[in-house]
Image 1 (cartoon, rainbow, N blue to C red):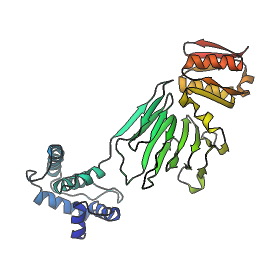
Image 2 (cartoon, rainbow, N blue to C red):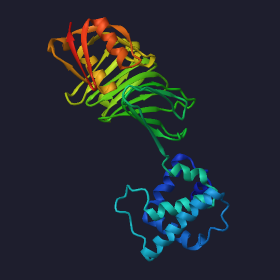
Image 3 (tube, one colour):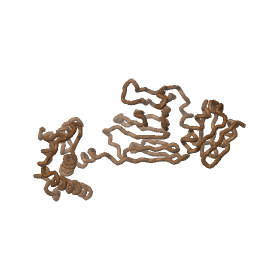
Length: 330
């Protein structure tokens, strides 16, 4: 290892490519031996380290753990079991101390995975969430979102969603990629745009309102699909059905404005909405009703207004029970 490159890394002056070279060296047997020598010779005490109170506490905790580890291993540095592993515990802790000792707190934070935030809405609840980059996500009922508490400008912005959510993604000056991870290894990649995501059980719908996005189904480039505004991507992983078609994008995300807009929507789809978003079991006595299509707009403030609206607009008899509704023709 070039000594100058190692010093450059410890001073946080490396390019990303140079940093990868250093990390590759530190993950090998020679690099681990080098780190162990530094621990034995240069880091017997933390008294001289120029750290603030929080950094000193973190460094001391790691230092104490390493001393215990050193005694347990009796000075033996074991090789990595697999070449692709980045560090052993000892190497990782040593790198952390070296970075702290040279004032490299920023680099230490880059090596430490950020804390994640997970938010969930109850049935019938909507919630507006502002992400670290000021992008806005509105969650529909019975939906969860997970994302890192802090986002680095050098890495893609990533969130994980289950349920239904509407995204308003800001565009960054460095064209930072924004990725929404969905179940079944599906991803939505964007730069700056507005779109609605629905993903429950085996079915996924992504509707683009503005901008441009790319749907990725697995890592196979043959399964990558570019979408334009007004298009919907639909996938049913159980039935192995995937397609794209033109839709009324505003109708698909009308729930954000406390309205439900139906545009040729089947009663079966309406029943699924009531089950997924509001936690109601829906019983439809006449199976022929399931295929009927409905168009119109009703208030979507709560379950009662939705049921009243459905009953009046579509001339149906709806009987409400505690956790179940029965739909019949009048």
